[in-house]
Length: 95
Image: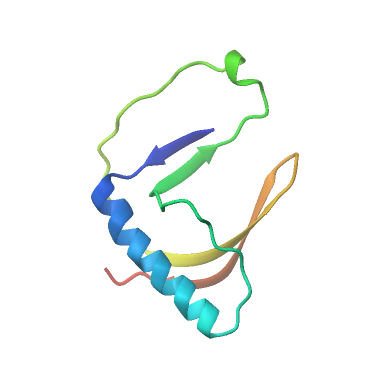
């Protein structure tokens, strides 16, 4: 897998937003499975099915700042072959 990871401050701030969204969904009767692990900001760029030992080590640090245009609630459907993502709700981001 190749991903971009956010820093601690981003993860803490967005983790708090995640908690608020989960509480609101639960109070609205939406059924979903919460993750037990601590939230960590990341963007998945690619996934591979090849064995780990056959993949090159390409770890690198990047310094990227951006303001998103939307915030989206997505559902992922994971299968042995691929992950399919569906946007459930999209709203303009007002940061």
